[in-house]
Image (cartoon, rainbow, N blue to C red):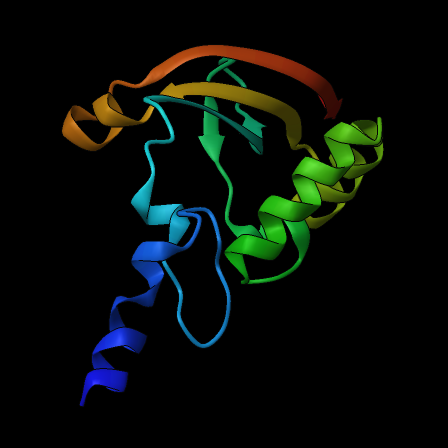
Length: 129
């Protein structure tokens, strides 16, 4: 019984950022990550200049959200935003425009009322006008 209690309490003695099997402290949920976050994404540019959100399938050819995020982040980081933009436009079809951008959001406001966009950095824009 005492051994079981020590095992259960052992995460308290470890570094809070330690995340190992079989006992996890879930550091992604247990620490303050701040209110502002930068999110790289691809949006469709509509004829009136406004933008529309795209699905993971339209962005990266998959329904996996995490894989889509990794694809966009890697493209931006490696200077390959133009290539990603062209691939997205091919998936969208003729006559469409896309933009690879990094958005800065206040995630607290986003959850509370949806008004969270603080700024946008454009990395690439492509497609038919």
